[in-house]
Length: 331
Image (tube, rainbow, N blue to C red; front, side):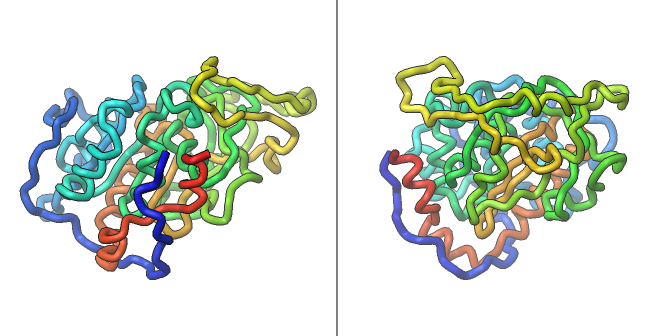
């Protein structure tokens, strides 16, 4: 896929701008005018009267959790997001509404089935991550993996497929986890549904690991130990899977599993950020009702958006992108 621009990212850091309060035209979409049927119990009930709303483009990767994210963003942002499926808009449509109409302040890329390396699973999301270097983006689960993939990280099979299990998370204090505790017995427990992960050792210099599993143990929803997979690594030998999603005609990137997949101390990457662009990813599901501090993560992403710098006028004039990401899309 051809890149829109080949300009390198500017070296200047951004300083906080405020989202535009100008009236805007509603883009054609599904769900853009919907209000959540119910609010999540507890927590902040949305922005205060002095806070302008934040306008989010929510890319739906055909996932059942997408409207959980819709509900959370509706509460946190003050207005419902616009929901567009990953094959509903071509890149030219995204460019029109994001850059020409200035219709959105940020983008959230939803979870979804399949692999970020499969075009029919990820749709326009890789192009968005490559081209929209000046727009705050949060990738969840599949969206998180896509962020890693476009910058050259390897997507590998997890030590164990995780479906609806709780894990304790440790983080490095990144603002995405502001006001959230960290580590074993801290209370920060998240819901995981995934069989693929970003290989920690493959992270390029542009991507920073900001969160990881605090221990190898899984927790039940009653906070008791569910399993201990310490013996799993002993049976893990080198092997590869050429076609992890069952598709053969979409020029997929091979997904492999090998001894390098084992992170030190069983720490699996649960969050990443780009070193110079406002792009973030979380492997777990902050939108799940069983994830602790999930709404706080969305509130923190809103704050990141509103404080994203006014010096980004240079970014807005010349949409930045990663050369490595461009090569990934072309290969």
